[in-house]
Length: 312
Image (tube, rainbow, N blue to C red; front, side, top):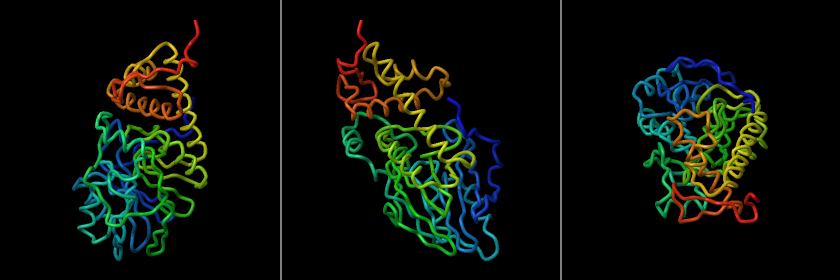
């Protein structure tokens, strides 16, 4: 399966880049296997600016954002796509420096489905990777709410899947897609913060908005959103088919299945692959295509219903 939007070369961290349409990007200095080159912070507007995803709590990145302000420019709004540590923590310090309010869907637990809320309350499912647990916006945003600034307007779309409180922000034909849709990799979905059922619905909604380009939380701009979203959903369908095929040989847990399916994945990323596999299993469980053989934990084995098992 060929990725329609391969990554380009990494831009320099800390240097503002003009992306057109009154939008600039500043790359945070936090590259990793999970963040690619680092987090993209976006500045929108010409005088009173919106900052989208301030990024990690890094003094150098804070200085880079403030240093990007020219004569007569200031920050009026700070918008956060979701409460992960590589997107949200700098919001509080940037707000303290500028007086701008922080806007987001809700706190770090907002937006979870009933299924994921139940798993989180049971306390056995694991997860919680990289969550900014103390994050809470000054101004909660409703799905579809319009935020108006000085010469710019943003529509906030609630798009859970990668994270329960995830939002995409639309400005004209540009969509700031956070970690829902990126150009360099498929997003991590780790329950209970990640929910594959929600992810599929959010991708369909994003496609329905028909943006001309996506500006993601990591990696290069996505020039063909429809192709990219289609590829991501086809990729998930292929993973689902591989899981069901593997389970036809007998019950297995997410770690066992990931080892069989993610054969070209570096060892350091296998824990993330196992979490993605668990997300698929929970989605399949909700569709009655697999069943757990014990109370749900990361080690729980799943099986196919008897009618779906491989016949001798």
